[in-house]
Image (cartoon, rainbow, N blue to C red; front, side):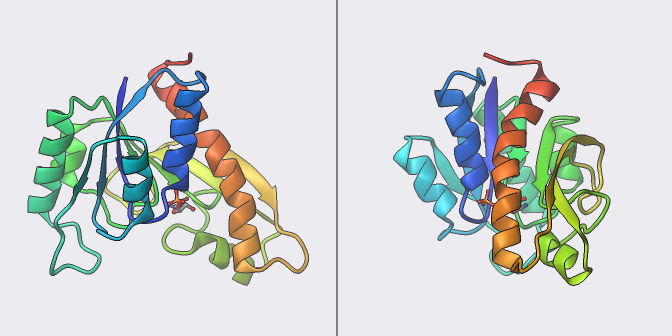
Length: 191
Ligand code: GRF
């Protein structure tokens, strides 16, 4: 199974998927890593592992993922013979051109127990809201923001004295565990 990854940031979730591949618990290959951010560390991580990378050209658009860029992204993923697309810290909203190219085959990881706290800085939303429980969700991607059917969730406690950073770090430990597991569930591919 060939995975394509879209990310805008550090790429720790991509690393977790890679670790699962390398320890033999996920029979897959990361075929291509795409980013809208030329400075994203996810690109460095990919290069360190000799994974092909490319930039998604969203110049002129701060947050939007223009149709043309989505079509180009879909073409790049198809050229790389990708079976499954994993969004891993990708900060733009995927829409029809790309969704249609990979029906039921685009996953996202979100740092909350969806449907609670969609959108940006979900862990901070939980903290500001006085939640006692937080977590993360892997879900199928549809045209909404962090909507789409849930595949797997994991909970973590919100502890007294938590900062946004400490809570996010606790959530990320669970993200790194459930993302490879969700890929196994969706594709039926174990080791
Ligand atoms: C994660 O918290 C993920 O849930 C959210 O963005 C963050 C990406 O982290 N969508 P990383 O780039 O995988 O380290």
